[in-house]
Length: 478
Image (cartoon, rainbow, N blue to C red; front, side):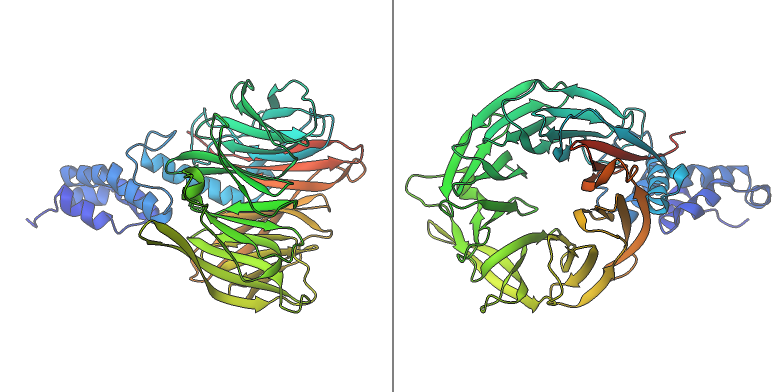
């Protein structure tokens, strides 16, 4: 009688199989029972359903699925694998039966910004839901359940219109700022006020940051000062003058170690700050920053896979042509002093026909730009990878994550694209349109954001108000 493979040997062999082959191994037919015996076939069934095999399969397919002991919202790794595979298929297909669309109204003014409060995680159970908060010119902040299409809570009317909102999903906290510079923290679950702080001038930029030392808030105001604040207390840790009497914009690196700060339309070069001294200021030490050797910068973004890689749109030395320059940042320490080295990696001129107004990074070397109704992908060296002209009117918002890209436009549609991860170089597949309401009542989409299983767009109405339009994708949980 031929020797039979034991469970450990089978598990090693099965570790090379894909999901479909594992399922076949779990359904050993009568022929194999006759040849191998019922005991051997039972071993095949048990080994093919092993938790470790399905965990490895998940990690192999989704690198972001880290080796945590329990899968959130599911009982088994096998269930997680098939639920997430189904979700990806539906979000790539975009058929009417793949999602539920809801028009959600409540604000009596224009929605100026939205933020997802629910954690960006792949959770598959009855408790999973997508929640967003919105701020509006009607002086309220509201929370919405996208699956139900209903309002969870609304704040009392505030003294001034709210213009921006950021979220801390792990803390279940949202932070808003109004047109006068009043910053307020709110409990995301109940809408109760948590803390507040008044800026001396209106806010020009605000960003939520999740640092290893704890979450913090970065705020720039119109007088040119950069504020670093604790969360959730909203206490000022440091305030640093950057560009006096200028409207300042900022963007934080993916690892929150760097902050890019620029003044719109200024001849002064933009600055990069090292966040550690901002979080732990000292009386005898100045904030650590460097000025980039460029002028008239207009847009900037970070490379998600290279936390210290910064791409900036600016004018050339003659002030005529647009250029994108990529810098690699490094903090060097000598004795008690820290300095920043900004090394130029690449630079290229944009075509004169392009007037980019949105910019995002993908991976380590890809830049996405929108110009009017077109979206174009470049490498950091200037090679044009792809160009899409799927919209009939100007693009107003762009969402980019490791799985997909979504654009919103004034033609009252959202366009969904999916990254093809099987290729070595980034390839973006144009998939489908998600349509808004009637052109008779709506003027177009102004914002779009997404989480793991929903898309939220802000639809501007011709009456001067806005509504949320949600697209929630279905997953069978049985």
